[in-house]
Length: 231
Image (cartoon, rainbow, N blue to C red; front, side, top):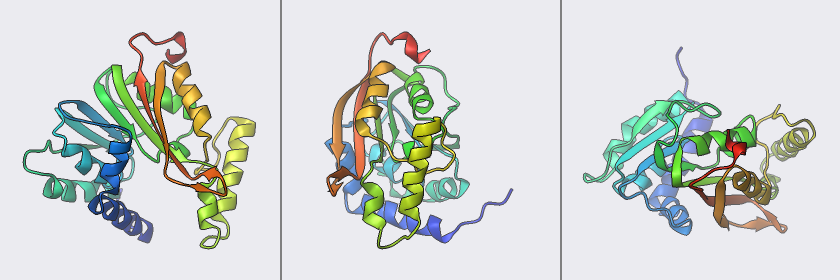
């Protein structure tokens, strides 16, 4: 199957590497007090690999990025080795996605999953899977969109904000994500994490729109002994 690059791919890649160049990607990690030095690291939903470049600078023991979009993976492979420092661990890129990751239980010390949660079929199932591949005492860092996110784009898109709110309403009522781009309440996401034995340590917001969180980040630590809910 041949994969075709679109204008959306080009815009996403351009924005991702612009944020990397401006230090925004690194600041996101620093705000969550993420240090990948000497660790086995997995980035889920790695996109074109901009976060992997930032993580590679810490010189982790092992660094893997997974994504379902072959265009992003092709671009990432062509750019990451070029942009990573010589002393850095060159990331390995694989095609995979939530809710099933091709790794053994308790493989990684650090798992990152930024801006993926709005698109997964089920929040809890996805978080359980992320926790499964994380070692006890390891760190999970996730981010997603809150209810203020679509308000930033009301002038630019006519239907997109309404679609996101509709997707969220359907998910709340049915428990199924029939439409992608759902929005999350970060406190509820933290509650899910706590219930599966991954304790929220830091919650961060980039900005609020009309008092509503636009984008949230959560850093959580997996307990040494997890409750039965994770089974």
